[in-house]
Amino acid sequence: MKVLNFGSLNLDYIYGLDHIVKPGETEHSKSLETICGGKGLNQSIALARSGSNVYHAGNVGAKDGAMLLDKMMSAGVDTQFVRKHNEPSGHALIQVDKQGQNSIILFGGANQKVDVAQIDSTLDFFNKGDVIVLQNEINLLETIIRKAHEKQLKIALNPSPFVESLCDLPLSWIDYLFVNEIEAESLLACDDADNIIDYSEQHQGMLIVMTLGSEGVDVIQNGVVQHVDAYSVKPKDTTAAGDTFTGYFLSAHLSGRSLIESAKQATKASAICVCREGASDSIPTMDELNTFEF
Ligand code: RIB
Image (tube, rainbow, N blue to C red):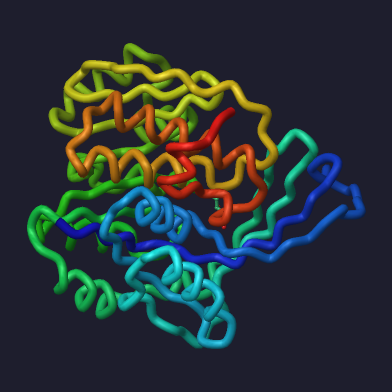
């Protein structure tokens, strides 16, 4: 079984600050780093580091995308479906405060230049039962979902960053849905635990993985909820924690591990990620996961 991640690749400009800048305020940054990120790239690296055979599709800038491609290839991601585009690569301006919380501005750039021919030629390589992983940092998401469904691929969706138009997606075709509480409320109209159980009962087979921050994670399928607690850690930088969780959970689940085992592995990986600074560089390898002591 192959895993295709059709998603974003961003250059992340990370500014270390005392606090996240308020409207009308100017603040000196203590540090600036330029690193590889993007929800797509981060999830592909997490998938590869946790043992999946992962292909990435998307676009980078012809002039500024080499660093992104090198990062993916050195992590073991197959980049044959990443195109070089005339548009500059997507980027993110990320403020990180003393508590490790962040605030992100996205510039789509080449990520928003996916076209139907690219979708068709990429999907040609994949077959029934293969898995496609999607987030919301590229264009034509609905088209990709429809074509993946027609090919009977299994579809994993992390509807992040959330925008209202995602509510129009054909969610009943999604096999694995990764949401936080705000996304669950906005996308599924589920603002409490009973609602999400009802939703899950009405969408038999769909696996809903709802991350709850410091409260851990609920894994819900056919109306049955299983819970895993979070690790208690002091975060340095929460960037890419959700992406790390998604990649590690999917790898474990697709390799046949139970939902609880998959959630435990993903919870540990994202806890390690928040103890480190940066996006893709903070995603642990499997060896680090097995030896890390909190
Ligand atoms: O999820 C973290 C990612 O969100 C960052 O790497 C940044 O690029 C934004 O896309």
